[in-house]
Length: 432
Image: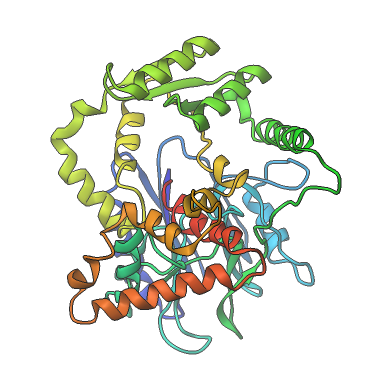
């Protein structure tokens, strides 16, 4: 949908060079328009698709940008102007907005706040380049942007690399480049002239315990009601939406609920006619009466290598390579909407999947070793990884395994619940 890069840097020459280099970088993104805005020491550059929702607000003292959409606690869709009141107002704690977005609010007197949706699905990374409050801050949706700043020194974080190779996604928000981090879910990146850059926690992903005496049927009804309310709440303006249909549980559940609620959408099914997902997705669309089209992504393999190089360059191995097929398929679709429904997170929100991943079928108990073995199925086998990493490979693998175990065991919830939060960060947030 979009990439964004922001810098707070008091040096005009460095800012100008950063903006110029980011514009050249974003020019490599096909089908996007590159734009920029600035105010004092802040500069912002973004590349957005032709239908990406972009809202910009600026006046003599402040600047706000919202890419995507956000909902406040009254279900009202917010604007870039709202960000200034809700994130930078003095003596008023900031809030997170529901939806899917990346947003920034800037005031010459109150500083900067940058954030995404509460569950951290929109990727956001940050780096402070130096020491002290005056050190430049870079916040971006792609780690490749850091290399555009003159003060950034490119070094591989070997702990970050080891985590990515072990589980096919960053562990503990630690990506490939040293000195950078992915912004934790539920946090804003804040910057003020007197304090410099820091994180501020605004939202915490909790769990809902059953009420006393609540039966299994009551729980199912409560979760079902919450799910339907969520679908209604996020209904896009004009019902201009599509859904990727594989026929699997997630997309099938969303599509059926949309049909039951009378919310129109259009289905997009990716693959060849004899693929199981095409046959299943087609059956679901026909059963629900949803108009759909089938896009054969197998026919676009001619540029696969170049596309994967571009994806890897912008993601730094922090997202699923299969996302390229989704992007190319959507680009070929004739009925794609401005908004895209997805159920990717439902089985993680409603049921801690990592409990099943770590459950020993013989004892019925969750164990860390079983969960780690399951996570490693998407990475390089942990018996081979130390040799691949080199002389300190065994030490690196031992450290990240110990850190992962400690994170599962430190509480406050049971290890299998804490593991669910870890898996959300490590897997779900890196598959958009």
